Image (cartoon, rainbow, N blue to C red; front, top):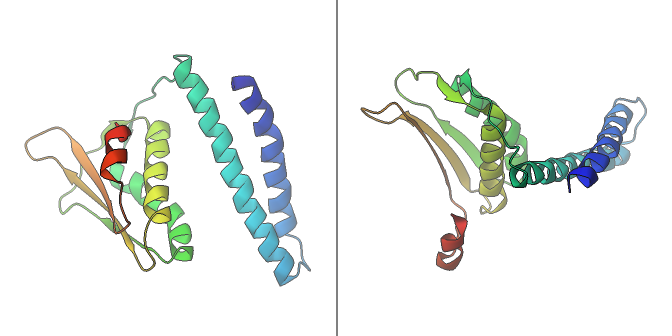
Amino acid sequence: LTVASHQLRTPVTEIKWAQESLLKEEGLSDGGRTILEGSIKSSGDLLKIVEDLLNIARIEGGRFGYNFTETDIVSFIGSHLAKTAPIARRAGVKIYLDKPKADMPKVWADTEKLSLVLDNLLENAVRYNVENGEVTVKIDQVQNQPFVEVVIRDTGFGVSEEDLKKLF
């Protein structure tokens, strides 16, 4: 799995780079631009799948370590929402950040691993939502505790009781 993923990552990255370079070319028709933008998105999706495979291999091999750094959680989540907003717009879903009322302390987090979780949750909240639906991310400090709580709510159809048991 590791070898195959590494071998896939390089050509997929090169394809995506070539597509992005072509998109900058002058004289590209609107139809060609639309096709190229769609293929760039698909290349990015494929690259994400390859990265997911590499992470699975790392987990199974016991090499999925953590690298904690002090992080401004509100800015961190805000940047992920900004990245998800165009996808949400295309899906007809509104996305909101419910910021805490008080200043938040910095948190110690592995931003790479937290990005994996956050991107997955946001992608699912948008993908499995309803037309004109909403996704709200709320950040708050847990009262009288040294923790921060992040809640993602959406207006999607949810997970069945049977599948819910399988999640964790």
